Picture (tube, rainbow, N blue to C red):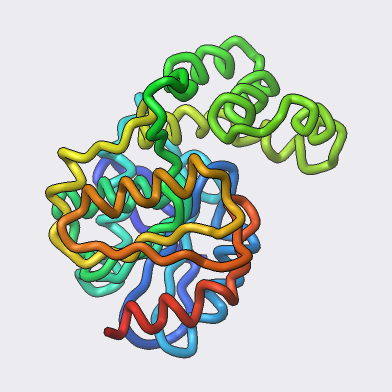
Amino acid sequence: MQHVTSADGTPIAYDRTGEGPAVVLVGGAFGDRREPTLAGLAALLAPSFTVCVYDRRGRGDSGDVHPYAVEREVDDLAALVAALGGEALVFGGSSGGALALEAAARGLPITRLAVFEPPYVTDPARPPLPGEKELTALVESGFRDQAVELFLTGGADLPAEMVAQMRAQPFWAAMEDVAHTLAYEAAVVGPGPVPAERLAGVGVPVLVLAGSESSPRMRDAAAAVTAALPDARLHTLEGQAHGALDPAALADLLTRFFTA
């Protein structure tokens, strides 16, 4: 484990493996740098790349500074890219993909970007996603479990019955431990609609990925993100789904895209 210091003084923990062009992997909600998909992907990419997988602020071995702002998370990514030599290839999954898109739109030295299903919403009739203030209020009032439940049902579209079953599992406590970071995910993604105006400012090639087994919402969002970007193509990963992504299904595709 190594650390970089972000612009506001926050220490950001990361693991660095492999040798070659720099690749940063950006995780989504609940996970840290040890999350199996990211860790597995890092191992598969390491023979061809210098791979950095990190703990986003507020989780794992990274620090946290309040108040939160999306700009601070972009600064975190900027510090990592600087530590890797000044430019990097980037992959972001789910809300980590939305964060990576924000970073690219703000001009970070990202040379190529791949994202898997940034969790936006294209249906105008759908209620807004759970908001940053709502999630923060639940956590600050001591209702971390309710914040997790709201995020899963209102943000990730899981049925209430499934969430009730998850509450009885050993991993639920770990989800509550990072409940404060769910407001960060809400801030990154926003109320739902694809931020087309900001994405129009992304000036690098982008590979947008969607799973064939993902919900229509996720597939539609991936298509809308692709349409909003100046230089992007959409690729469907057969047999993959949001929250159930096989690192091996990603590694070869990313290798070919990052070395094109």
